Image 1 (cartoon, helix red, strand yellow):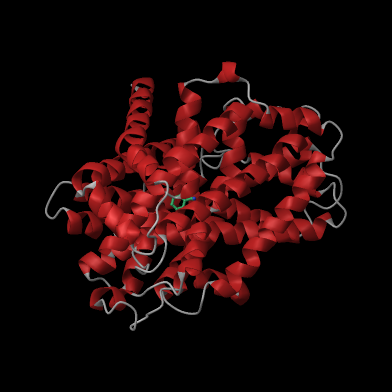
Image 2 (cartoon, protein in one colour):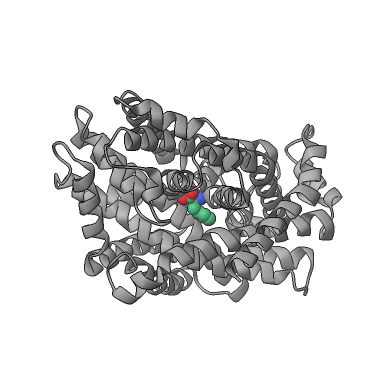
Length: 476
Ligand code: PHE
């Protein structure tokens, strides 16, 4: 376990103090990423997680297949990248947590509330995200124990998941382990370098995903799955698809909730914000697209299964993976590795989520890191319990579909709202010329400048407002 802990520790741990750079006293006291590569790894670590592997295929399945993928890619390129760059800019300029950042640019204004939305939103997000990370932990030890040895049918796989997700004690224990580890890492704060482990683990996750994808596409009958996934049917395009695609882009890129403001606050003026955002968007989308290549061919090649069978927030990936793993030679070892790496990917995301409220309490309220991590961590754990129990664990939470609602509010609406606010803030309040000046440090030729300015001032706000109105009228 200590090996695993080290890996997680490294995520946050690269806030290196570099007192020789820049000579900025405040910034140096807060700590700084070792280099741009470290920052890109950390930001990609936050972005790549369950959102790519668990949630993306689920969203594709529920929203018309390839058409969703198409809109999703557009959303990442046009809106996701735009908002991410806006967050990086504000974060690096102010070198503060989201509340402090809004306040530094527009002191004593209501804009600060957007910062609070991020701080509170991250804690709530972590509560239900921690439950799914707990599933990954549960599947890791199940695989280790040999549960998925031998040929796994859909029925068996479904029964294993349903049975597991409905066991209150086990689920709460898994949630406790996840939040506990996250809290531990965050409370320890700064140490060692991120490169060492992530450089090694992320490519490994990538390698395993590729192998599984190759096996999936070579299954008999995989073609139907591939065309469901990759051949868009434009008659299925509607506002719901757009809403969930934009929501998924925000979810997967970790934007709209202050994480990227916070991470960029530890960044040096020498680093290139534009290419950093580009790389994070690229890696993140690549992993999500590959996850779909594993899920859909397997799903369509398995008798009795169709993607629309699944409710949001179920464990599609968890149910499909054992099937594909059981079909490859050495599947036992692959399974263990896969769930271990999924767990690491999930933890690099939970760490970034907890870092936002903790940075707030440390920066703005002068709490010690330890106290902030423990109290916020405990709050997230308590709030996570009803989500954990809403898959059959406790009748009333299951009936309310508690986790589905947490996902809708914090995994979609809050992120989109946060994205809207940061775009308006950068475009009209802080003013574009100041943002461009910040971007110019570390990047003198910003060739996409006019497109970004247009997107931040017009496209992102308009699209987000339209989908928010749509969702409010739907639920109203
Ligand atoms: N992007 C992460 C994932 O895809 C989830 C996340 C969202 C993390 C928002 C931090 C902030 O799993």
